[in-house]
Length: 138
Ligand code: CMP
Picture 1 (cartoon, protein in one colour):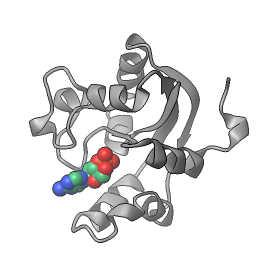
Picture 2 (picture 1 turned 45 degrees about the vertical axis):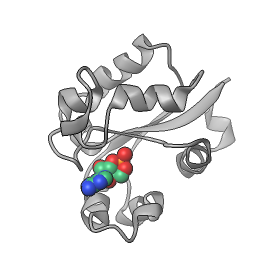
Picture 3 (picture 1 turned 90 degrees about the vertical axis):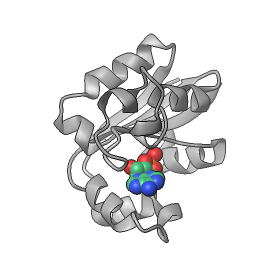
Picture 4 (picture 1 turned 135 degrees about the horizontal axis):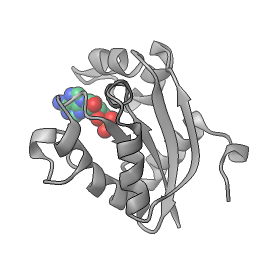
């Protein structure tokens, strides 16, 4: 059973898309085992996206991610990292497959509705960034 971190980004929260995103996870056999709403500080966003600190979009990305509330979730299931990435679609919504979350709702390569961990190592770091062991249900 794998685990991954999902974040419903500020654009999706402000547009009233929390339920829509969660429905897609639940309809596809993914279990939510932890969930919280929070507003990241700029520093917290910079730490979360530290792997991207040299990228030209880092400043703008961390401004955006700290601009409003997000919903962070731990998702569990077989092949959940891959499954979540398939449901999200490509980072660039213009390249995302039909029927994916980003294709249906993203408006911009940055404002792309959701984030999902890209490997088991990243998932471990990202889950522990927002949740302690007592906040995950069995
Ligand atoms: P995410 O999956 O959260 O990982 C990094 C984020 O950086 C990405 O989604 C986008 O929100 C944002 N981003 C902005 N510009 C780019 C870009 N050119 N390539 C990749 N990610 C980008």
